[in-house]
Image: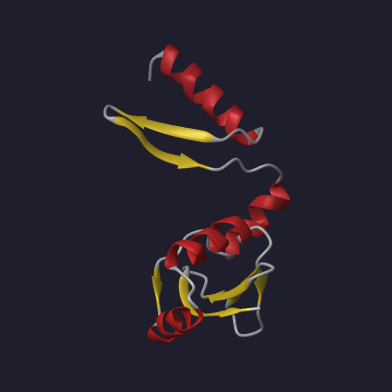
Length: 116
C-alpha cells in the first residue's frame, strides 16, 4: 500500500473512531453510508439490535395492514430506535415510539407491529 493510501486509510479510521459519519464512494457516486457511531457504549448497544429491516412475518404484514402502518414507517422506526431498542426475554428486540411498537429478531426480521 502506498504512503498516500495508508495516510488516507489512517484518517478514515480516525474519523470513524471520532464519531464522524462515513460515506463510501464508488465510481458512480455514493455506494453506501454509515451513520456516525460515538462511544464504545453506543457500539455495544447497537451490536444486538438490528438497524435495518430484513423482512416481515405474515402476522406483521396483517397487523400493519389492519392498523394502517406502512413498511416505510416501520423501517424508519427500526433505524431511528436501534440504539434504544430493548432486548426481550425471548431474544427479540422491542423498538418503541410514541405511536407504534415493533418487535423484531436480532436479524431485523419483523415479527409484529402495533399502534400504541
